Length: 623
Image (cartoon, rainbow, N blue to C red; front, side):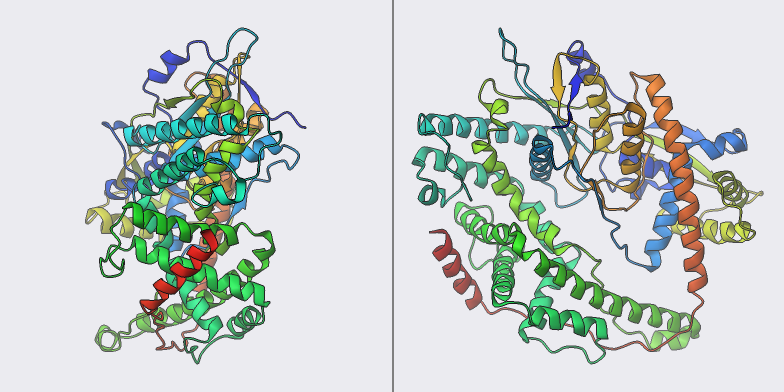
């Protein structure tokens, strides 16, 4: 098995842990690009910002072109410009964890689940987590240590909940070891929660402990669970898909050939796949009802009560079971194909309508305004459903021999990673500066200045919408002020880097994150691995770009400089690529205006009796 762990540093750690780190976070870099204060708060931050001004009248053009925060600012501007007219299509890239390194893969799954289960806010919250293995010597047994960072600040609520999870897991592990005793190989737990006693033969105290753990997780994550189900109308999208497959809803007259083909494939799926699709749909219906903020929709269930939690757990278990079934992967791929076809049709309708609207006089535009159908951004059905597995995934650590060392000897410690103070940066923007930066980045096209003019106009318009009218200076320069903080996975990476200098203990070379990293964090991790010859990674990236500030290895200036040199080249290359893509979109926007449909699809509403029926199914399955 390939060596994947890195030696970690213990000596002097307590002093480092207490210091105020000034590392760049994902949000910091984004905001430092050009984000106004209102948008930079998309991720909350703590403390008072530091101030840093990038003035083109002071800096040389060569220095400007190499300023990483300026490059990131431009990249975010290009991404934002694209999203103004086209909803983001996820450019998913997942790291291919070495299949031979079963330990790393196992830890990666657990750390990602833990990070997601530490989220308690409905939105705008990100958590990263890593683990330092216990110190085991012939004379002593030190505790494992969990490093946790929260975007923008250290959250006592996140730290407290992680300690609760660890305590419950340790207590359950000790009960498990006590009950297994000399019985040899431990029994497998498919779902170690409410129904585990029937399937495993384990005693009641352990089952009650696991039940308490799972209830605690759901109670803490209640708001975030609602968001995961309803985000971007994903539940509505899945609901309409099943209605289309089962023939409950009428199909639009202007359905495209791609849409028809994808729907036909779903309708011709095997009876097993069709049954699984409908069971997941019904379970999601109950989950959506239980998490609803509407009292009538909850059918007398009190939010976060034991009764509601048990019903929620039972429905989640149905989703988790089917999402984990590898034989259903092709079914979820068919769902993605159908959703993508529907999205393409709706986006084409919207584009044609907006072009038609732009070509008409204002008086005609007002009289012909139509309600456009909601467009759900593309998403992976399988990945969406798999998030229901986080709860049972954590419970399974109790019976994992690979994770036994974390909990059996000494209670693990939880160490919040210090985060740097958010920093305010003022970016001075002009056509000349953007043109010069693009040239120095390697774009040699003749129409570069024409593109820069259009791009800068867009930056100015978006800045005006967020912070009011902007008056450029006499030379055409305008400024944007942004408060930014370092993305939390980069904070954790810096701490892991410090620990890797010692031979006393080992780290797991993985940073668990509650959501996939942004494209710029992903680039930074790539550069870090290349510079250090290490393997530390996250699960991957969703390809989106957010306000971002460059991380800094405060305790290792030489390595920090090496990483930033690599990062500068990657950012310049990405800037040229994204600028060319933006120019292509600008040219495409001049295309012909066509017909737009009036069809607006309305989701079919389940009757209240569906709740009763599904609860009977769940009860029959779980006991």
